Each structure stands twice: as structure tokens, then as C-alpha cells.
Length: 438
Image 1 (cartoon, rainbow, N blue to C red):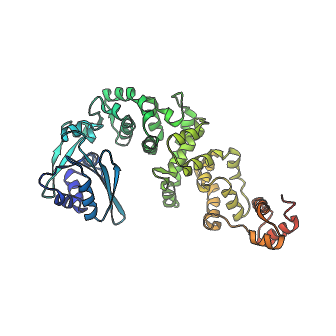
Image 2 (cartoon, rainbow, N blue to C red; image 1 turned 180 degrees about the vertical axis):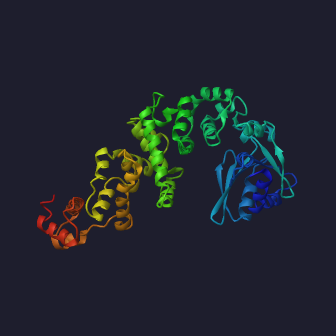
């Protein structure tokens, strides 16, 4: 996508003509940052940043109303706000902020990297002015170079180090020598950055394939402690496991079941943390032998869903992986056994299959029956028991904890293949009479 194509995209989405119509003669508004970088690099963006001379709040709210979008404040102190509106199945985000200095030149000089420090004036006729590039960001982009805007910007916000490392990976950029040196010196300040901001950048770095490359640049900058590796070095066997995990996920996302797996791994357990990332984190913690992973996850402000998912995967043992090779006989037995693995049972099955260390084609054949059994027998996320608590209260006169113990024993009998239907379940419970099961 070129700059003219970017302009046409903004016109097509009604952002440009609408925004221009809301500007007064005294207003100054620039499109800045990533959208321009992506356009020059033939990438498409639906995330646009605008910088204005005055408080952009009223302008942003007016644009949200005109486009039938939603406006909300991001940072009240800095007067930064966002609007989100939907076109068909796609959402577009527009962020608004005042200049970081007295004018656009000062604003661009205070940004992180030159490739993000370009601007284009929004004209009153609904078009974009020519590219304004005082720091030669376009040239750096064409030379595949990542260069800081000034010597102090990485110290002002050390999170920019992670952002720069992410850019170097995703855009295949070489980090300029002075910038690399400054990154190393400023890295110690990252511990003062909010955990959720660090988590966001680490998630994007680890989502870049291969993750080994992202972990390598973190090691180079002395930032592996963010992922619990306090000595700053990585175990090569653990990296090999990460490589295999990525290859296994890629294998699953291809072939006949590929669309389902792609959506499955892409789904987020919480904002910015997909199942794919949870999978990689569990592999990382296991491969590197990091016992304090819960402290790491809490420091990154991961929510309970992510913490429980990672913990659940790490509790899955090699011995359980071997059970995939000698599965329960019945479909319900397979489904019940899978449910007992972890809260994220399907992800746990994929993780167990990885631990088998067998050819992927053979491993997949072991995995499919368990996934299919879950699909056939789960209702509202659980496999219902053959006999429920109401039946046990009525015919066995059981109450409270005794019912729970009976249900657990019934599950075990099914998994072991001793019970296959409701009649057998009722006979088992009547014979044992509850108190014997306790």
C-alpha cells in the first residue's frame, strides 16, 4: 500500500472527509506514526494515530458521533483518547493525542523511532498533504534500519526497547549501532514499567515466529528476567522444545482440521493473550525449568484465566502423555479423561501430544479421537454424568459431599472402562451404596 492508497483507504472509510469537515481554520491535525510506516512498507493498517496542536478530545468525540463509533478516554492527564467504529466485519481504531511539544517537529522528535516519526497534514479539502519526514524515517525504512529519534527517548519510556525489538523482528529491521547501545543501557529501567504494558509487548514478540528469535533479542538486551530466566541465559534443549512446539502448532493449523485449529489457537483467554501464547509460555517455562512461573505471570498482570491455563498445562505430566497411546475404550471415557487434565482440556491434549516426541502424523492420529470425543459428549462445556445428583438423592438417599464422591468414583469407573451405560452406572452405585464409596 502506497501513501495515495492509504489516502484512498481513509477516504473510503469516511475518516478523511469527515475529519476534515470537523476542522476549523485554526485547527491543525496530522496523521502520524504506524499507518504511514505501514503504507510505505506496503502493509495495510486499520489503526490510525492523529496528533493535534490543541486538546483533541472534542474533535475525537465529534468524529465518533459522525461515524457512529465509540469514544473513550485513554489517558485523561495527557488528553489521549480513542474512537472505534465498525465497517462490515472489520473494526477501525483512531487514536487522538495533542502534540508532545510546541509543534509537530517537537512532537516527532519525542517519538521512539524514526520509522514512527513521520506525519501527513490533514487538509481542509479532505486529502492528505505530502509526507513530512524531518528525521528521515522513510530512508531508514527503505534501508531496513531501526534508529532512535533522539538519545533520551528510550530512557524516557524503557518500554520502547521492547517495542523496538518487536519492530526489528516483525519488520525485519537491523537495529542501528547507537540505538542498540542505548537499548542495553536503558534496559534496567524497564522494571518500573507497568506489568500489563510489558505483557503486551512480550506477547507480540513471542507471537513472532520463530519465538527463538524473539527470545534471542531479549537475551541480548538482558531482559530474559521478564520471563523468569534470572541468569540471563537460555537452555538450548528448552529452545529446541519451543521450536518443536511451534512446528506442532503449525502442523495442526494445516490440513483438513486447519481452520478449526487456527481459530482455536487465535482465541484470546484475556486481552492480548491467545491460546497460542499460553501454549508457548507453558513450553518456555517447562523447557527452561522455571519453577517461579506464577510469580512471573503475576508480575505481567496476567489474569486468573491465563494463570490457571498455564498452571494446568504445566501440571500435565509425561506419564499422562503416554495415556494417549493407550486410551480409554469408550468415547465417554476419552472425554472424561480429557476433562480431568486441565480447565483448557483441548489445549492440554495438544500439549500432551507434543510431549510424546513422535512424528507429527502419528501424534495427530493419537490426538484426534480425544478431541472428537469431547466434541460429541460435552454439553455446555462439560460431559454430563450418566447418573445425576437428583437420582442419587431419590434412590440412594445421599446428600452433599457424598454425591460428589459418588460422581467422582463413577467418572473413574467409566474412564477405566468398567462402566459403559446408565444401567451399569445405577447398578454400580446401588451396589456400593455411597458410604462404601466415601
